[in-house]
Length: 534
Image (cartoon, helix red, strand yellow):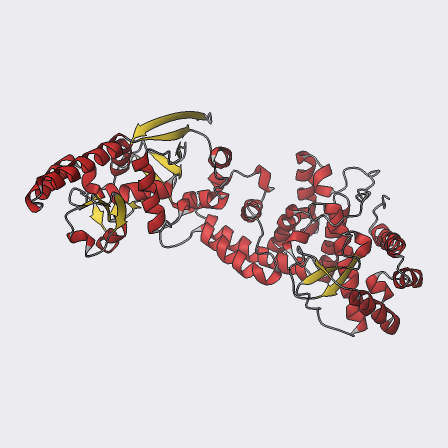
């Protein structure tokens, strides 16, 4: 079967679009979820049609593999046995509005949700020349014409007869008839542009959509997969992922990428995610149970990252691939203390050595195989080494030492400082149980410099991605705590640094503190068997 993709721009008249939907030639895939437009958005759409304004192109897809779709569009349920149909990737809200409003319920042969008809009932006020929504009083006014009448020639002629009969002033009825005819012609002849994609797989459709969509909106991969794996009234992957992300808010991982969760599920099938065809996997009968089990293991993996590694926010996770591997660990084994310690070292080493960027895909396959074999007790080293002479070293720290959450190297240092903070805090307070990390705030001694040497980590409930500036009281608090409780190790403070800060030699103090952090970090990294790169 060819996987060649054809992309063709075209356009059709509005009435042709309505017929295509009515005949079942255009389908709504289930990943589009529910109709969300409010009445104002629907009214604005028709006002654009009246003015002849463009309403944006539709994106239609005719894939090689059929996916699940909705039978209901607006209040109408469309049953069709046609096999040669396309899916609406972009334009669901617009198409639903147009079909729901402009379809005459008296002429529709399928099922109608009577309770929803009024939501899709709109009128054109021939007197004031504006579109208005349904109300009980509007339905009785002769100068308000239902929009579905405008695209139905027979109904329109009957409406004209009613106008002539009910309006005594011939000039007034003639004016209304003229306005109705002009609007009817505008609607019937209105041309809608569309881009037709033929062939390709789910990933191709996602990529094309993200490139051509003018609003920058993305189709989420999990909704596409849901369309393949959907079982009515049962399993919908996208909903399961949404539930998971809500639960992960307690660990500050609510912004975890949905595609990363998909990759965890793919990897749980036994191969690294980049070697798994998600379309084939999603159509297997075991896919729902595989997904649910993986979601449970993702929770365990994130709890481990949060509590054991102090990766207390998704923004601090160096690599999403680390989560995929750790999830696989919990799938294959209930780790003991030795496993946890080794897994923590693996997190540190893969973070500091750019483990997932220096390896090619072939080496990543070998690393994944080695990782699984360690879990199964077949090898002793969890950390893959391609040859016995291979050495690992840290990437160099950015020269300006600025806080940048896009840098794995910076994240590694932040995590080192976080762990030092918590370990010292645990000792200081004689805590035997796991320290409840919560959220931390990044505080700066000097508000003008957002660099590592200027950073003080203190407990506060606040988003770490939004550092706050503080007054000199912060310096006093830290110095007091250092002198009273001997917490210099916790805050990376020395007597010389204290003297610089108290004598207003801020630049010198920050420089000394950077060097102290680097010195302590080097000791830590070298204990992992990694060469520290200055």
